[in-house]
Image (cartoon, rainbow, N blue to C red; front, side):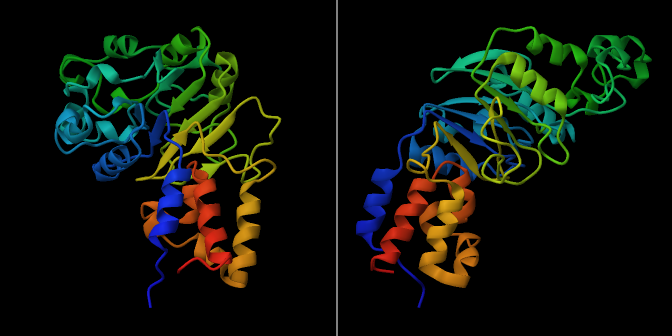
Length: 311
């Protein structure tokens, strides 16, 4: 018999889920239904898409059901220049002015900095000094190209999702910010970059949140960064979201405490339960939902099960 959690528990879980000011969404890759569903359910003040959007129609058409429900912002990812349609449905959309790349904007009470795209060694290998980059800006690259090599009289479409040194320096020299939204990851990720850390530290942000790697990661919770780090960092998986400010675990509670509680409830089957998509968690796994800001909600479900909730 399929487990069901009582409507009483559903009501308590909904009550315990605080309304987020901001929601960050991992790479949609053309599927924006989870974004629409989450906004309709949680009613955040604003959202930020973390790149690789690949809208199948102009972005404002794809997100029309929520245009009046929340403020929409985005950064682009490397796959947003895979085709003419990927490019045009984003940069040709009525929401094109909501691209955070290379600037800082106050959103839902937070100053949010954005750095879209990825590092490509043909432009700039960030392991090398920035002065050694092949091209400091897209204009510098364009000037080296023959007319027949250009795309729409500019640089190639592909490199319109490359990070140029000037993009990075523009942010590095900017005012302070609270949050840095990037497509690339910080150095704590196996495929991350120290220059992302340096940018975050220079801006003085509290939070770095990124997409690109298709995995939800709480860098502190997974032991990849310490609580003494100058900022918190999270990766957001494809189709999932991170709510901010987070619905943090209770005082002294960590994600390890969630695992410990699950072990008390399920014993050896705890990890399997945590890794299985759950209908009351928007189809996310309890682990991903907790990492995305819903640890309190996961805990409330576990407590209800532990103390005889109808399941």
